[in-house]
Length: 157
Length: 157
Image (cartoon, rainbow over all chains, first blue to last red; front, side, top):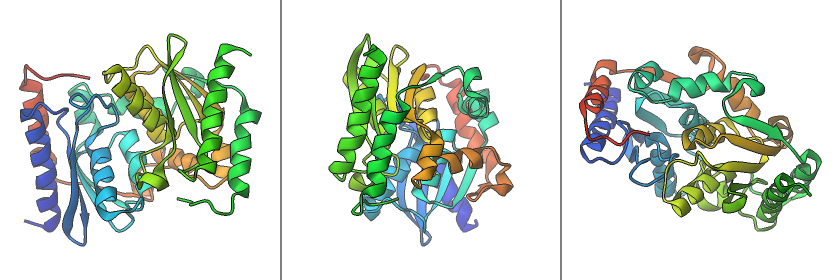
């Protein structure tokens, strides 16, 4: 079995255990550094009342905790399903640069998860999205950004 | 001052406090239900070593904890900056249906945050993204989805 399949097999195993344990949706993920699994995650949206607790987000948070960093640029993620836009963006923010995935967003749509729908929403003009987006107090909000720019002791990421 | 500005003013205040406290980036958010702030959040990426700890994600997690639910369909979010794709998707998953925002993703790009870049990445074909996406073990992964479909006791979301 190639190394990549070994790691994906663990992500799949987590997705199946998650159904049996009634923890959340059928999704699992592992994060690998130097060919070793350094963190794992499974969907716990319903168990933890946390709509952000997708497998990839849980795995990223665990990996960062384990490695004591907010930058996972030397890591790879294996996820049992193609990341939704939330998780794909989290992967970008974490600086992980390679994603292995099993199921696709179409497979997720077939079992009634909104991944594909949210990808479609992202691509629409704001006034055609189902979520209303209203811009207010732009000038007042900019004050914080000006303060940030001037701050010489800030930690960038 | 209109009610909406009162809530946005609090989100802006959180974004400014966050710079002064060295907690993370210049971003704050509040979640409102029945005209009352029921949760708030500020960016704590660098302080907590958590690349997913954007203001909106923190606020959503706090709101769900406070209300003991994973569904915020009766809530509105006020955020000092237009949500990045991670946070916009988290808002969709949480079922919040209205977003008031102050700064835009272009403003965020101007102070070196990747929000606009990640939106652009989402719109690209997979083979043109900076993050590599590799599909493996599709059939094996599908087993979990089949099991999920057959599970009559699952909690859907």
